[in-house]
Length: 203
Image (tube, rainbow, N blue to C red; front, side, top):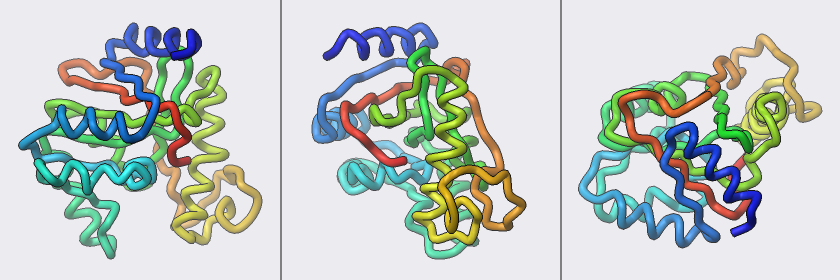
């Protein structure tokens, strides 16, 4: 592991997160399979989780609830509510700083809500492409890169999806950046672990 990443991990640990670093997706998924057994798991809909095929792996020994596979809004809302009461919640972030802050943007709020309270433990799965130098860069990445790319992936009719990839602070009904959470430090009274993977994952 490079000294740069050792420093970043120490900064996350200063924020009271558990941190596990893996060189490959396979090693990270193996670790999660071994660590989480016999639990109800809620997913915060995330391209990263889809990319590493985590649901299929964890479903072998757990009950996994994933709103990301829902076919309509009503089903999504009902499933997302169930995710708020699970033992374990797993999601990703839109950006993370080298000093240890995390950033998430959300439209319905289920991913942010699920990552804050009510579970035995929360896992954040983070690829190295999400790391930024400071908080300003992290917010910029979340607003002007991650959110527009996700809007485009979802084929929404927002300005950021159909025009230049940047935030237009629009008033579209399809807008997905309705709220932004800055995690300055681990939330009290809940276990949180950052799974840092030495690969590019998601937007």
